[in-house]
Image 1 (cartoon, rainbow, N blue to C red):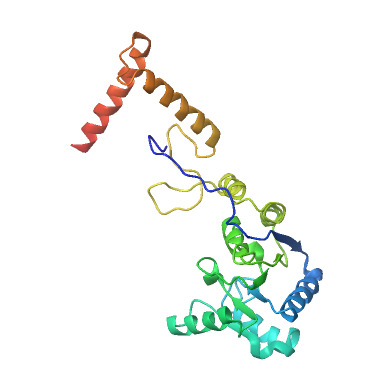
Image 2 (image 1 turned 90 degrees about the vertical axis):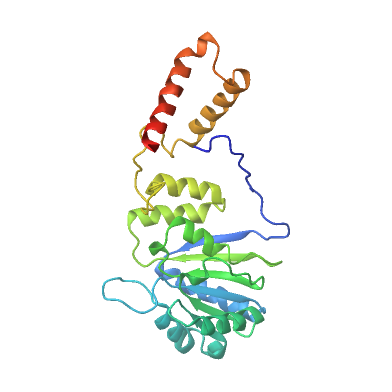
Length: 261
């Protein structure tokens, strides 16, 4: 699939990063997560609270950022009401920048947000990631959220909360809770959802490849190595033993030229 391109794999965390403990909690265990947030803020650190929706919806049973923001300020952390901030994609760019500045500076201790913080956020003092409605997110998203903490010198925790997950969602949450390896999660995501289209817009499902399957990663790698070995020894496929292969290559090249015209 990659032809003669070399692939660089970065499989190590940046130096100095602390491990992140990931816990999947049942609804009745939600107070455990809130107690941890309170303790971390009291210790001078910060927390994210992620919700899948901006506002409540009759069609989707899940927590919404605007409602959770008000509830946390009023019921859960009244002592922190002035230090809880709200961020979501419907805000103007100026308002979002102002909120992120409050959080980055430490003025805001708890940031209630939607998926807009999935990437590009670096707040080393944040040590808690609490994800409400975790069953509404995919494996890659959950791993990206988790990566917003554990970026400083303090140990961090990621809490996964889901009120009524489906069996498929339970499988995803269990995977995230037991592994922090992004490559393993990406492979699991590929196997669970399918790769989608290589040249289209569909991001899941089985592609219409005639021969290869993106699920066969190890077989593809082994095949590529065999092809490299063969071409190193006989670049033009001139040996008699490679006559059939040479004929197939010529037919394939002729077909490509014909399609181009």
